[in-house]
Length: 406
Image (tube, rainbow, N blue to C red; front, side):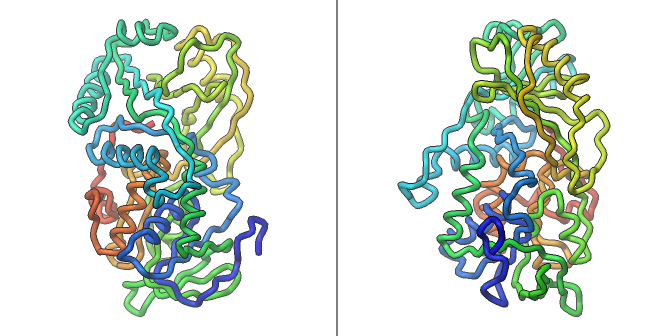
């Protein structure tokens, strides 16, 4: 047994489904598979670091929004909101499962030019058609509801207070793993280091573990987060996913605001929101290259030179703030279009992707996990048509673009 009290040796020599990666997506796909009455196969989840100390799931800000420009992305988040709010019901009305509310203080996208304001209006129409509560607001309307903003350069914004904000993603993750194990999912603290294909290269027949065991498999799921490319290359496949560093800062304000701060996306790219008794801010670096898979070193100048000045300019009441915590995490960044990569490979037919979420992974995990489980069980998506995210668009070099990327 390893330090996380998870077995490091598989109980069987063959599994119907082997999932490479046991964080949010390994947990989601395995739980939805094990919960599907039409699936009666065996499931192995292999996680290289069962402490989850450095994974993207641990570093997430646990956000939820419907403010996307693509209808399917809106629908995906709407299912996530329903799943989170009704978690106990989805988990067989288990009385042990806690109530998991969404702190719905909303997102506030601010536009400082008419072109971006028109993009927000177009997105609002898409969201409204899906039943989302997004509304486009003028500067005077924003100032009426949130008088602490400096809006001198703002021409408008989109805001939604319904099922949009923050939720406890860690609890969702924990219950997917706990319930999954009770349904028969086997978690392994080990690492897949190689894959064996058949003679024609059309199927993965086995995976080799770092400890030396060779495990036969019916289907392989790549749920490796920022390490998706490393896993894919074991099957001779390239996928445009790389680790990109993202920074989160927690700060205290000498003069706290008199109401919740919605997750505000400043035109500069800096975002900020209420975080319990504190506030959270984040941003990408100005130069955004791929980084090493184990590089979590912070650049402290980003807070001092970029984030703090923008936060204090947008909210003058935040002139006097104190940084209390910070960390760097990784996006599993899809360099083609920053949207998810799903479905089977075009040649290696039993190699399934759940990769490249580019910062949207936590809030999309219920719908994407459910859809991937349907694909494995039935050979098709049944609840939501997720085919726009299928891997074949990667080979065609046809981006499925989403305008609302943070």
